[in-house]
Length: 302
Length: 209
View 1 (cartoon, rainbow over the protein chains, first blue to last red):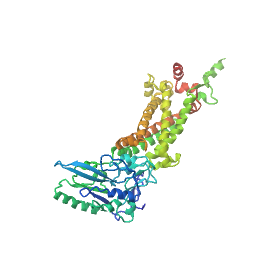
View 2: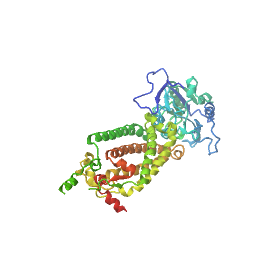
View 3: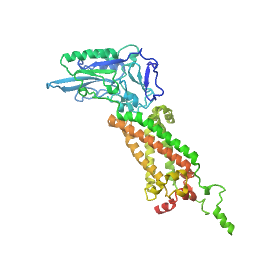
View 4: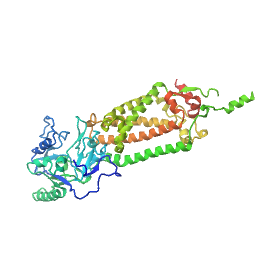
């Protein structure tokens, strides 16, 4: 994919940022999922497998139409089936098209141990460079959405790329292309926000007073947004209520690194200074040619 | 004073072999670990070939390092118990650094500074093995929640940095106190060296037997 449009790169210090000169022309893109329109047909799941050349092993029944139960290295998006009893004691199925959220401020990229293994493109997509990935799993442990998965086959991390290869040639992601009900949409971030606003207003008119757009601020907003029946209960869709970059990741990268560097340099500097100022610490008696003055005096007396 | 140049055993062969194996294995572990913590220094993972190989080898080298360290710590345990001579020495630590020997209270086989290093290594060994297994992809990490693995990663890296600082002190002191590196290489130090740095080592060692 185009390497010219990488605006952020894992394992890289702020002193040497990725290309920042060209800004404005490339529009941020967003995938929009309208949960109120989804029928759970799983076409998106299949289209993803087809386009990305992935074949999940056939699993076993887990008491749900959901299969597999979580994202895997071979399933970059899955359809989650949530059985919810609403206020009128009525059972409702809530479907979640689960995939990478393409955060504006990605925890995976921040946690990554390897330079350039995770990149963010100018259009907002977050992509893994499998060739560089070493399989440390830091991204998997940092992601607040539990998205990246480490493959047992090649020990590398995998997740939805938002079909960055398709986007590069002006196509929409394969899941969007195939969606049977129009629940999945794709376009510039501006357009998607505009559409979502109108759709949410429409839902509110129809009685879904809590309808809203899931675009969590804690990760700087996401390039995969969701319209939900009840924005106050994203957990009923299997989504975290307030996702943020985990404290452990922030402490490691923003505190431990600078403080550790300072501590190391200070200790080494102090050691060198001490070595030069205090000088050698030798056992004089052991030096060649050492003369024991006291013993000599004894000999002189005799 | 004719016995000044007489040599005495400070480190037995098995302990010396253990120590220098740890140096080699630890060097690989630390260089690879450093490359994960500071991606700008990923070239340090080149010690084992590629970054991918470093990821695979680091835990195995780490296991050997930790296992051998545990053996050494057990073997040197008796020398590192806290005793009544330690507090006066600690109070005089500035004189130790300035090499004003007349102001330094006598100590045995190890001085309190070395004992503190020993204690910190005990903590590091336990922390490394526990957190290291928890974050070990792809074998053990999937057994723990993402959040647990993330905290384990933080503790693991913090211990790595702290141990590296402790190792800088260890190397600094070994280089400064001339005679200690040959002592660890060949096992023997002169009686004069022992009298100068660890005056009560001879009696202490005798008592142990």
